[in-house]
Amino acid sequence: MSLAPPTCLRFRPLGIDTSAEYVVYMHAGCHICRAEGFAAQARLAVSANQRTLIATLNIVRGDLIGIDEASLSISAQRALGIRAGTILHFSHMPVLASASHVRAKVFGQTLDRAALQAIVDDAVSGRLSDLHLAAFVTACAGERLDLDETTSLTEAMVAVGERLSWDRHPVVDKHCVGGLPGNRTTPIVVAIVTACGLLMPKTSSRAITSPAGTADTMEVLAPVDLDITAIRRVVNQTGGCIVWGGGMQLSPADDVLIRIERPLDLDSDGQLVASILSKKLAAGSERVLIDLPVGPTAKVRDAITAQRLSSRLITVGARLGLQVQVRLTDGRQPVGRGIGPGLEARDLLQVLRCDAQAPQDLAERALDLAGQVLELGDAATPGTGLSLARHTLTSGRAWQQFQAICDAQGGLRAVPQAPLRHLVLASQAGKVSTIDNRVLARIAKLAGAPQSKAAGVDLLVKLAEPVEQQQPLYAIHAEAPGELQYALCYALAHPNVIQLEN
Image (cartoon, rainbow, N blue to C red; front, side):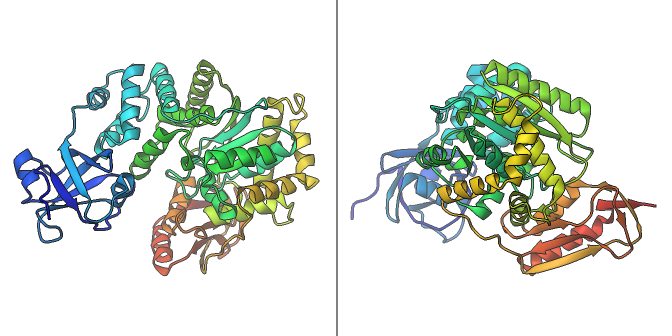
């Protein structure tokens, strides 16, 4: 057997899952570590099969791998397309200008278009480590991205991905900035709007800091991981779609940044605007309605912040040729009853079917937004959109259209139910005065949402409603006893999540 060259090691799979981060594992005594001076957390170029990626080095001390072997995380192994015994080639990673730009932003400097493009390019290609990206996301948090930087970041994010175009116009879209549990209006809006003849190719995100994103909820009902060819087929067939944006290369930088934002629980204004608008531009949208809930425990907490964010969305959109309209909505309490993918899917199906048990606040909110989109897309004259939306829903046309979209995406599925359920009761009588969106969302996440599709919280009361002592306030749904107990412990530690007044 021939000897591997001095800068090479043989690949040994260990099956280590590091999500999307590329990691390489070497024995502390291997000749490459010693000769090249590689230390833990160093960034290395790894090549095989005429492919190259950048990975973070982890040092192994023990007999997990030999001194003539190296291993890779599952994501890196798949990216290189290798199997056991493949020769891996290693080299030092070149100095990245983008890393200098990240440091500059950390120290408060303003970045130009070229610097932001370099960061986005290297983020998507994997040349920047998760540590670099975490530093960048943190440095941009709050109000640390100005208007020009936000515009440049949006342009850079669009530039690194593919971009859809459509033969029919106008192309409309609707987006919610998030932060309001259960606000799953998008599938209802898409069904109504496309039933009225407008084109609405809706790409959505999975949850970042919430118990469910639109894609998580829609995935309960139909496949959402469609490629661009499938999306075109669905839209050409039905006029719309509701798919996961990460299933294609429309805005890959956004997916990278979301992966970093999720564990940090950060979602800054500038990056929020860039995230929303880059996806809309990449999907070929021309006119977009933004739902911006405002409330003390929503993502946007006050009118001043809402106006600032609205202005940035409208201004950046106009700079990039996108007509943006912002709708400020009530964010004081969750929408509907369900919080979590399966429970939210149940709610929106009840609305579309005009079920007597359907949550009316979800129905009215979706109708209002759908009416605005119909007017924005010139399918209804000013002031008549809500009436058209309501007729489309109550006549059954929206439900028929939603079924057609689901069938085109792969078929309508049944909503799962969690095997475990625990009721949280009122300790006293009174009237509901406040509901903490963030704590309820946290309880739903601890119960397993969004990974466990049937997990979450069912909200059983609304603001201003009278409550009797021992009346159920909400129910925790879980698929595993440990997750139910975890959520319940947190809920008991936060008894004022739903406050009552005499």
